[in-house]
Length: 504
Image (cartoon, rainbow, N blue to C red):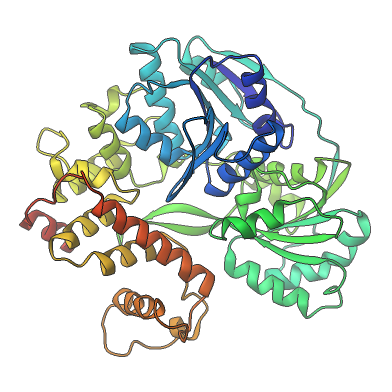
């Protein structure tokens, strides 16, 4: 194994895989390049296909949630961590894989920690020849090297250019869009390249776009949006090289993995929406938080990819020093039920005997065990049940996969799949008149939204973000198809366990 540390924009993602192929490191096996986000996986596949003079779906492909472009000729697959975990549950030994690259490991998602442990288990048991590369821009390699035991640490300085950092004098309570407009004149004058603006979410992207469009800078550059739930076609358009100067309003999808050529200035809001567990609804949610110093370093590095750049941070230097140095590993703050179900499907009986870089809290494991038991996914011995196997075949939180499976027994797949997609994809009703109005006849706004989206299939006259709605409906169709796939295990009879879990 190799643990590689190199700064943002050094070329880890697009440089390492082609060299592995050129030197025939993987032999006849596949190389899996694991990315934390769908956008990053698709973008990496596109860039690598161009570099290897092939097309996406040829020697290079990708596999993300509800989207896959691979063929029998594909040697290098860029995939999300979730897809790697699903592959490991189906093919525990990764029979046709010679090398796995865990990219952007410093993000320390629960999924990537789980994947690292599963790969370590495979390597130490039956596949010692399986090659593993762990890559990070900010994480120190020594703890990972010690965890793997036989790994080699490699540190590269990369080819990044210096980036001048400027902080605002004091914190502002103005809207983020107004703060961006206030500094935009200085930013546009400081360099001649594209400007990348990091914002917490899509709502802030829209409000900042409106603020810029209402300002005197509206004609100084092309305004572009960049976030995870955009269509691949629209994402590709933003990532393409352009002679026209751009102001790119992005979420943290632009923080890692992808490089937008020509960016020489960054405006950083200093905030991000971080996945955390909402105990009231029993599902993950995005919560607004200040970013860490390491994330700020990542973002600033995007301005120094092709020439010296500048990064303007919308918070004072004194508060920057008070921020945490790195992000907390997700395993210390997230719901553990999906990970526990994956381990049960993999045959792990003792969670704490599993090789963890950072072990989970016992309280989180106990809560996950109770939930999965109520859902009927595991039995009293923590062994996966038939229902559990059906649940893990769906790329959903266990609560939602159980909801869809239960709905299949009552021939209500369409509404259940839309509900599940609504709870996992971007909300198409956010910031619309519908979201701000009172409910008409239901005491559950989720059912109201499901009905609205069902109606949208046949009419466009609905107060909804059309692009986001199409993504939700596309995800819902994929969920429904997974349930209806020929050869899937038959849906078991309804039981009281599931009903009790819904009420719990």
